[in-house]
Length: 532
Image (cartoon, rainbow, N blue to C red; front, side, top):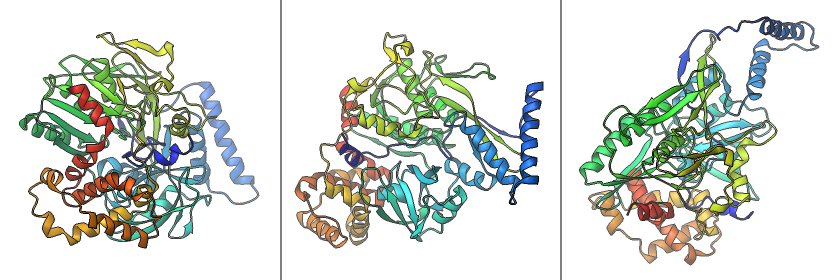
């Protein structure tokens, strides 16, 4: 199974080995100047103990120490004892953290976390420079501009300062990737990081529409509603909603999208915590797509808000969930801003699907919570549906009689194994080094006048084909870049399809990329069979 760790990413848009770090979260926001007070003699005694210890260290420690540093370390350590998603955000990082769902900035386009003194890529931002070059979640950044950053005590703000920069400038990073024997070098050209969360919406055929949502941000519902309206006008009767690789985001965006699918009064989700009463969200109006057939695509990178949507659809027997088991993030965080401009995101509740499932998977501080993806590879779950373990104590039944399970993500109704049949080392190197994208950009620039002859992305998809000479030029280009030239004939169909999608993206963005790259997507093919 070890070789599969190299194979699994070739045709796979985004796999999250680490989910829900900076900028991706669920919950409401409070902007207050202080933490709420806690009554009780025991709390008072413990507070005195912490204060006295801090004062003792400040007054008596052999070297000078920073009170700010000690305080932040104490807060971080305390939150780490709770769950994987409660976190502390220093004042210097809060604005940049919130930007990832609400704003835009120039940079390389990765969400990251510092784990064990190492910069770990949580997810490349869809459509950003890093995603286009093939940087993957779980990658570990070892050097930036030839300076070692792994094991050096690097902080979030240090990473942001090094990776952000003016659009058009470049930064060199070296990445350690599980399964790769040597560091992989990427030269990333900084760009404006896209803030749109609906990457594509188009008609697959005369009656089936497709919408891809990469995350749930402030504008997601408006973007989705606009695409939905366009597709309905085009004759859409069935919809494929693609939430694969979507790490979540705003709870309200997920609820609003569910409202388009469910009839008035249907339960969408509810939250409940020890100190928080049950709070339920229901469909409230006539949605714009309550009757048509619906398939929701998910995988191990679909988390939180993605799981709310897929759980609501599944539990209300509204549509079919297609793909692989989702991440399993069922905890709700609330952000509390502190007086100094820093913030705490504290887990204050669990969310439950309409049947009463909490899909949060188990976690323990003694386990590597973020290694779950690789565990799924090792136990064969990505390839065999029978490898998915379920807890019979978490067994629920939908109104239509379907058996569903909680305690570890959403298990799809139609399982689709991860496809590695077309894997080749040549294609892998073309992607990881950025050579394929570079060739596509050069080709697009050289052939701009020819590309302008195509009326639309669909016209380009249906009529354009590369010549044999084009492929030989790509091989020669790759050889000059140091790529090993092996299995080029076996790689040819997938390489050219990927290249065509990249050329289309250079002109039509996601509207050009997805209609082409999806043509060989087995999960979409399974969804089409289900809908038809």
